[in-house]
Length: 133
Image (cartoon, rainbow, N blue to C red; front, side, top):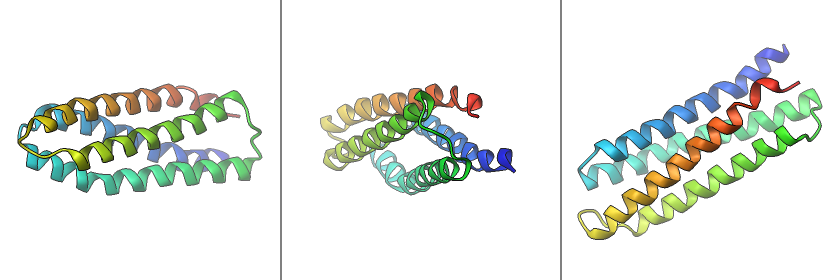
């Protein structure tokens, strides 16, 4: 029972990691600014859904299994907050950017940097997950 509960948390984390990695690839490969902006606006729905699933299942697992606050748990909470903060900054930068202008090139670099940081947070915390009690 305990392993199936933890797997309900792990699968959205894996899906979120793949989504962030896919976004990095799309930013690098997609040359059309309008299509990129449209893609990033649409994929945010999947990003919000997966992030909500991760946060909700993480909180439910902590309550269900009575897991005390440890460094690993605090790191996971910090990672969730950091990832949400980075995505919010990326989204606000995207709203300001105008396709086919110089500011959109700057946005591409910012978005790529934010997604790389998100991916690093996910991989760093994902390495701690197997050691949970």
